[in-house]
Length: 436
Image 1 (cartoon, rainbow, N blue to C red):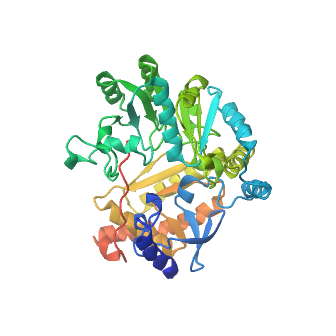
Image 2 (spheres, rainbow, N blue to C red):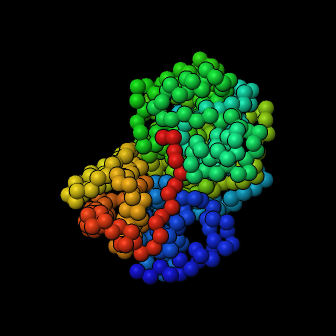
Image 3 (cartoon, helix red, strand yellow):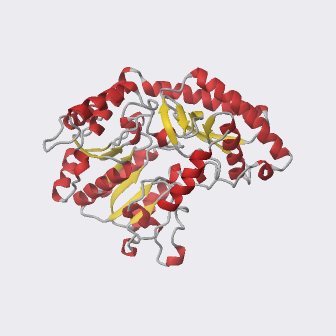
């Protein structure tokens, strides 16, 4: 398969754009260094055409989790095209943002107020600013991944600069003011003792958690965090940028019967169009008025229009149920095929964001080989699948047939201890460590 146009453009991009891409997760080196197609010409449903006119089926991150309905969804596109033709920006405000606020509050009855942004990372900054303004406390305890901003990366600053980065390997804090040391303190998912220790030793005003990633809460983990937040008067923020909309229409926390003070959503809420929201309790959200939180493009019209169309389609088509069904089919397929070929893998939930890992010392080499061989078969594939509404049973069946051949090839390589020799390029880069 010839992907040379994309490869050449990627090599050019790295000379013009630091890192080649604005997003770590989209860098070609994260998938298949020197061979990844890198750029797309067209995308529809789960199909992607690269610059060399190769057609691939996307069985990996689907726009980094943003396109839960599938690429270029007709209903969402029609809503966007309508507001573009009528004017996507003006001196007056768009009515869609009020309509969207009502819908978000209807879906989350514990909330009374909404603010908007256009990306998850900046929405988290808004949430943190509001929470700090409300409690008038600086220190944050957090669990999970929450973006690129100073408040979060400050957790990787150490008293000794030579130790910077020791908490979350892969997230470099260069450029983050050292004066922020010990303002953001991490604890691991399902480790309530660590949070209790942090709270005991620090004046915590904000607690931030991803309520779900690849683990279910155990021993009332989320409820205990809620209780601790109430006890110390901290604002509890649920970061649902990744988990939101996949298990249920709204935040995944609704399935656990534990409500935060503030929830942040993005990604899947607008099916590929930039949109994010901070949803919260009215008295806490009102603290936004005591600070300065304002930006021109937070008032454009495309994001809210896309979000309204996306959420309504999720409701009418029962999208989360489809994601669960297809994700379960993929997970069980991996499990069976791994057993058939005597491969040691671990499968991680939830079904809508199903993931597997190779349990070998050279797992990164094996994962790269998997991506390499699946690409030859016409699939963009790695160890995770962000399931979309456009993934069908037939698509999954064909995908699993390709996985069957690839797992067989990998098993032989492991048996003969020649995985590196089977790779046609360098080993893919690894990502960063999470606390979930």
